[in-house]
Length: 272
Image (cartoon, rainbow, N blue to C red; front, side, top):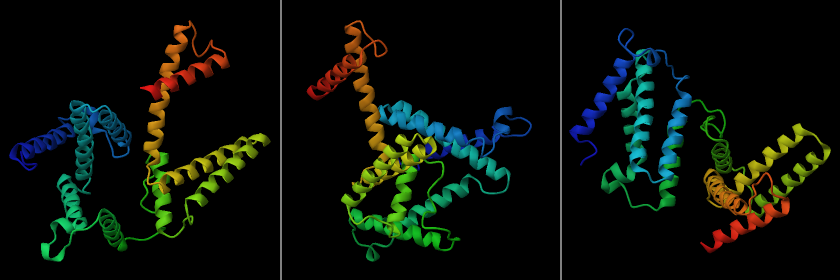
């Protein structure tokens, strides 16, 4: 079925009408009527996280449901903006459609004016188009455009990428790796001095430099850490089972018993 089939358009229009009714000053829902762009921020983040959980589980019914919840947030925010005379849902859709046409000339421009491009060339073209789009806006810094509400690892990586594109870059991976060693030494020094404020600052610097290593290897720091969390959970669960078989728990086991159980969990993972 086409993505622009009548049923799709009808269902979208139905959702827009429902949201407008919920916001009606007299007949609407008391909760929906009092919402603002600011009050809805956390819900958009939560719904996005729930969708990502569904993706990780390959749960397609849940993905469908959570995408609907995200769409609700988009339509609700557009309705609030329309009521205040800023923009409406049609403006949102038009803006995005125009942007996609503008940023994909290799697909939508006349064939005689375009050529097949590599992934690297396409990425460069995308970045160049975005720069031209921002040219008319007031420029502050090369780091503009990194959302403050991104998770810290993703925000750090985007900021480092922008800094690198502006010319602020290590000459090679080994130099970036050496910076991690330098920051780790500063963490040790702050810990030895008992200065908690300095320690917090140095730990932040260390995390930042590790994110940079991920960027150098074309890895997403957010994904790398998420994978590490999954691995830790898997191994810790096995450790708990190993200890339980001995009548122990992480709280009652000795350090030696914990270490043996952890190594056993790692070995089981390697064999599976």
